[in-house]
Length: 123
Image 1: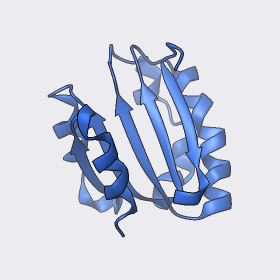
Image 2: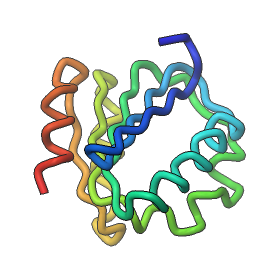
Image 3: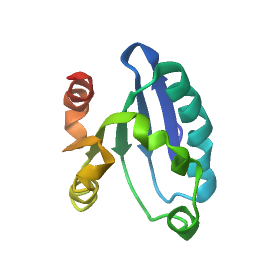
């Protein structure tokens, strides 16, 4: 996989998307996956997300301070999110997200990617 900040892949047969993060993210990186994700949700209904964090070097402040496409209701169509990373501080923070989102989240080590893929499908 090329060394891009965010890579996006769809798996329609599993109603799952995988997002891989490497390095620093800017608003354009984030926005680049929102349109395909919205189309995937429209075609699939509810989906599962596997977020693989290989490295993380921060993000553009605009991501956190300006409303983005995800604010349009995409999160309501996500059933499960598996966070896959060996970055110790990253996974527990994401997995401690408020349960009011209605999204089940679970953290996995990078070596447990296949286990994460099985978990998101265990409905």
